[in-house]
Image (cartoon, rainbow, N blue to C red):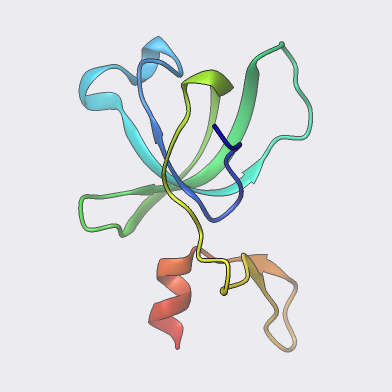
Length: 102
């Protein structure tokens, strides 16, 4: 499996951590992946929780087993994960939000 990258949509379920069992499973569009590996095989992820229509409903930080992460959708390589807006700091914008802005 190729490691997930910012902009990818990942599935977070019980193989990532028991807290995401059943209806607590999440679909997340990744914003960042923690650089520090506090415990071998575990990682911090930051991203937007997506509803059934693919719209962001909440921003979450989750601590999960990296081996349990499933990449559901890769970020489109032609679209940058980060965009620059004149007069504003660089911010990560989920691809769904980018398409709505254009």
